[in-house]
Length: 242
Image (cartoon, rainbow, N blue to C red; front, side, top):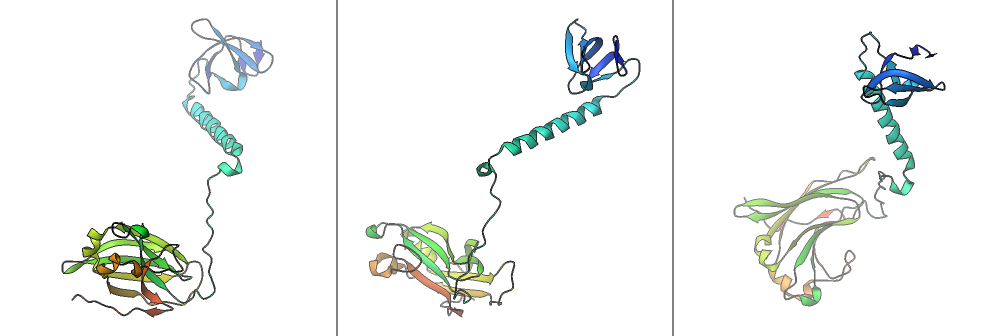
């Protein structure tokens, strides 16, 4: 009996896995019985074997291609089975702009973590961006006769960004600080804002006084705010180191 070019007695190899043998018979038009060297007959789909005979066939490339096709098919099936909620989130909404936000206003804010326990609370520092601009900033403090970088980051429009946590033992290194920043928008034209370099004196005594921390529009708890720029008016430098 013969199917296509395959007949009983032909030597064959499997395409999608290692192994092969001799054709021992057929089951219908699509199944070939392959007898291995131990005498076991393995039913295989006709399109899963190739005749070797006395010819020199290099099937390694065929096996590799078939395996890759099967893996791609399995991957496509897995992706189709994913529910919408399981799919990775790639969309990010653009920050909303607000009326009046075209004037640049930014603050350095200090917030007590336990305002009712002011005698031993720790504090958090934030950069507040109350404008429709993205702001890239560097936060620095004096170290000896020079400056050291404490933090640098980008703040989205109309948001605040946590910078660092500190205790009263760190106030000595924060007596003189500076904010350098540049403002811009993405994917649209905008009015150019000047680069800003503001240097501030941080009075450590204020961190021991409850009235220092005031109600404000940016935090639910009282905070100490240092304006860097407000309605496009840049704060005057308070210190300078040559």
